[in-house]
Structure formats: structure tokens, C-alpha cells
Image 1 (tube, helix red, strand yellow):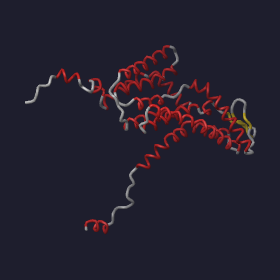
Image 2 (cartoon, rainbow, N blue to C red):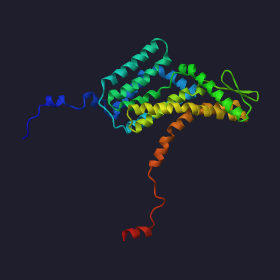
Image 3 (tube, rainbow, N blue to C red):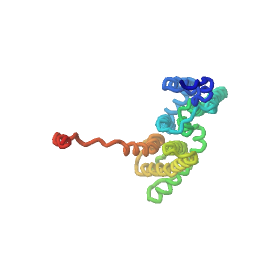
Image 4 (spheres, rainbow, N blue to C red):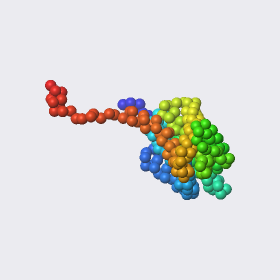
Length: 299
């Protein structure tokens, strides 16, 4: 008979706290996520309105899925942390304060913070993966409206110089845009590409996370992707200006720019993932073995 083990002693060295075990399991996770969504129900009407009226904001919809994909490959999970619960409480308090101050549009920022806190409080993911959920909330439209027009004017100047050098009849509008053949293509704040820089930073963070990069690598990946969005947006605006100067209507070009602001950005950000998934997919055999081959195998 072996030595008697004191239950009190084993409880003190339990590697998994009871709160961790209590929060484990898909049922508990689903209930906690539903509770979080209900707690932030005051921000949903404003958020849905933003997603419907502002096409650029729809890029944020892909980041919950990316966070889920990254969590499946996450090898750096840790035990539940007290500061994860602190982030959860902070996100909820931020929402209440913003609603009390009658700035509901700011309150949605607390949703991303609370989501990160919930993942860390439950010990479901590492910090690097949980932070991907910050990109699941669109950036404030007020920030885009302040900085976006300046970038849009810069892109219009580059497009004007490039197309004029190529011999196309275009002129730059002082307010940001292009004129050709008596018709005007007005560039909005989203055409500056600031929201694309933010989204690309999230894609860079995701790819660095999949490589298992340290925090410095995560920051370099996010920064590199974000900076690449600026010349890309210049190319997009210049290409749109060329189509406009070649006779495309302003409405059609405007619709194409709006589509790129979310679907194009999303496609570019996911292209490496889709390419990698296709490259790693097993290749099925072209045809089943013939009876002659099966007989040869038996011999």
C-alpha cells in the first residue's frame, strides 16, 4: 500500500484553477460569448448601420474568423489571467461610460477590448491571437473623416501626374478627385486608404502569428503590411482614374472603388492563406487502379 496523499496538499499545486475548468468546454464558451453580445446590444444598431452604409467597414467581418483559425493552431495558450478579466470589465465599463455620454459610436470600441479580455480570462488563446479581435471592430469613422481626405488628395495628385504624363486628359480637383470630359470623379475619405492600412496591419499580425513570431516580429509584420497599403491605394486610384479618362462613367468607377475598399482588401489579405491552403491540400489520384494493376499488386 502506497503512502497516503493529503488532499489539501494536492489542491495547492493544482495546475488548472477551478475557474479555468469551469470556463472550459464549448457549451460554456458559447454561453459566455452570447452573454458578451447581449451586454453590448446597445452598440449593435449603430454598428450594423455602419456596415451597411460604409462599405470599407466590412473588412472587419473577416477578423473573427481569422482569430478562430489562429486559435486552432495556437500553441502558446496560457492559464486564465486576472488582467484578462480586468480587460473584460474595462470594456464593459467603457461601453457604459460612452453610452452615458451619448457617444454610442465610441462605445463599440469597448467590444473589441472586452472580447480580448474574455479570451484571456478563459485561457482559450494566447495574447497574440486574442489581440486579433481588436480588428473585428471597424475603426472610428470620425478618425477616417479627419485623415482620409488628406490621403485622398495625395492619391489624386499622383494619379493626375501619372495620367497626364501618359497623355490622358484629366485634371485634379482641388477638393480631391479627377475631372475628365466635363465629368467629375470625387474621391471620398475612404479613398485615402487609411482603413486599408488598418486592415492590412491586422492581416500582417495574423500571418506573423501563424509563423509563431515573437512580439517584435508581430509588430514588424503588422507595420510592413500597413505601409504596403499606401502605394497599393495609389495604384488603385490611378487605375480608376485611367478607366475614368478612357470613358467609364463616374458612377461605375465610384462603385468599383467602393467594392475594392472592402472586398479587394479582403481578397489581398486572404490570398496568401488561400494559396497556402491549396498548396498543402492532398492531391487525389486521377483514377482508381485498374483490375490489372490490382492483380499485379497481389502478385
